Image (cartoon, rainbow, N blue to C red; front, top):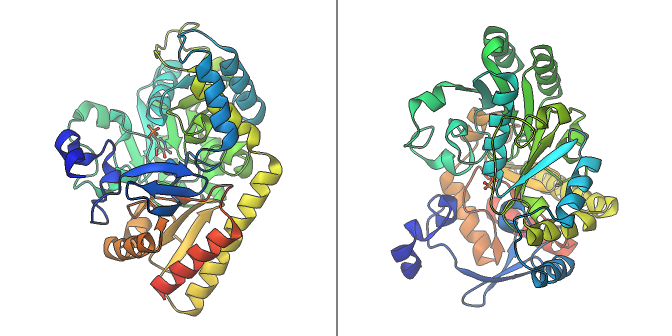
Length: 416
Ligand SMILES: Cc1ncc(COP(=O)(O)O)c(C=O)c1O
């Protein structure tokens, strides 16, 4: 790590990897296979971070690796439209209810940033609404009161962002239908879009209240405000229709990332054709990318999506629900001040017994010290969790009942 710190800021390329929230030295990983990560000392860890949710099929899945090798043999980047791009776009449009057309980019950050620009271009309005504790990547306008790594900054946003950017960003408490109604009723003529993680995972997992989402959809429809679901984390996590299909609320634009790249850098945003057609080359909203829709990435994504059969999802979702309720039953019986919250295979720990509905609840239920103790205890048992509280951990289709039993035993020993 000393070598890494000399040439990379904090020894990392993304802040939360630096273990600042949990202390100790970050591990340097060398290899991943199935559910396991191996560090440079050859020590194995059962991985529940899974490249921050991207690896729903686990590490180095045979069919994904084969697809990547075959694609790379045909050339790594063309800078033109390719067949796999069309095929994955068709797959996404077929399965995700809100998507008629899609644009691929290289990260979730790019997807949300571009979706907001598109919404502004479409509506000719400037203001955006987001929710405290939702994280949409690191573009200027979306960093206010953001969750994930931003939650551990001393201020509610990053330095280096001009006030003019943040002034157009209204950040509201999640799950608060009244605050949302008041803000939209007051400012609707200026509001281009509302963007949210429909099931937030970047302040730990929060399940949305049904009336909150229904009210959100009704208000945005009434005032012709573009509703953007950021499904970079939740997309393709529980089913092929994404969280919107589970929740029965269809946004105007959906942002995707992580899983659709099969472990490669990727992002995408798609939605109603009449909105998407405002993008260049058909419309006046500009957005472009040298590597967008890269053929190797698209093949990795396609191989991943094709392996996500309904039975694979059912098995994974059920295993996770069972694991969470079993853990919570024992924690409750033991009077432990902790519980697991989950949206199927997206799971997080809360150091409280009451459900968490918003960022304030999440911060009150977080305990850096307890999380750090749990994190390091699990690490010693060969289990790798995200190195920060207020993140989600993930289970892949490769994790077995034995893996989850082991995790269950270790959580119980550590927290009881
Ligand atoms: C919901 C959500 N949106 C956007 C992003 C940003 O994606 P990326 O890190 O690929 O830029 C993330 C990353 O964790 C995310 O969880």
